[in-house]
Image 1 (cartoon, rainbow, N blue to C red):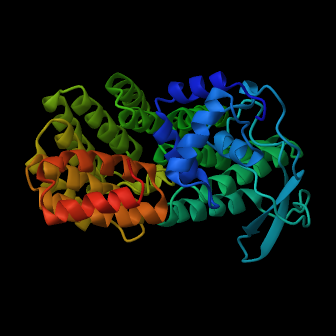
Image 2 (cartoon, rainbow, N blue to C red):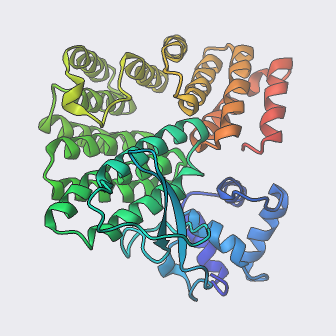
Length: 422
């Protein structure tokens, strides 16, 4: 990226809907190492966009991690290590290391380039009949999913990308049946990456990965996979506040499967889409349908896609829909009840829901309670670096502004400023 025109950087930033301070926050959140303080980074971005300074290699990698694609570069990226090593745990408990070529991700159009160098070790045992790669990848996906909920997406994304790279590389050396067997974990990893970027509020990149997941699900010819990815596309559209797309994708999923847990999840996302469109009655009917299907569904029919779905999950979505519709008192009560029913492992999601309850409490005029909840959510957001939490807390800051003289609100606002949440 050195030599990239400042105009190109500026146009890319504006296309993402970010002002300069927002981009500075995104770059800081994307970094796993210390970078310039917020105000200094703002000045650096402006100088890069004016063309008065050249973007360094270090910040080039951060821009790339945010989705600045290779075809936008005027010069090739700097040379780096050819391989990285990935630590993997096999089903029988052994630890092995895999060399992954950095140039091989998931295809030439992938926008994700987040290399992390590590010592070179022994290669993947491609022709070992006891390696059981499909089982290993499914276990790895489960471990990464759990780590995401505990620690947030930023540390998980590079690992997930590299695991998917190994699958794509391995599939080239397998016979037809073996290649098809690897499609299932590939779909699951693409869906996981879609979710990780959704939590980062990198919606374009999230959509890219869900598109890949849908493509591979069709290649697998598994209608449950197809239906679930359609439901996930509905969920993503809901987060993007696109009710038409959310409703259409969920209805497509329900046409494939409506009486299992995937159908219940799709009905939940469709209900929220109708709430975004202002249709209270349709939203309520679909939430009732989701609960009815959940009560009668056999979870084994939908495994492993919707292990997250339970009554608390539907409750928290309905609370979000009530908030969208302006029913702040009911939304706050719904969030409080749903948070009480969350599973222990849903750490990051607890932070999201606490922030949403805080927003509803503020909307109902309970500013001090909102500030207290906001501080609890901020602690989880700081730990997990979840952009979803930070976005919700920005709304809480605005909603508590009328009570700026309150000690609780003052403390909350100060903590937000110290955490650089804007």
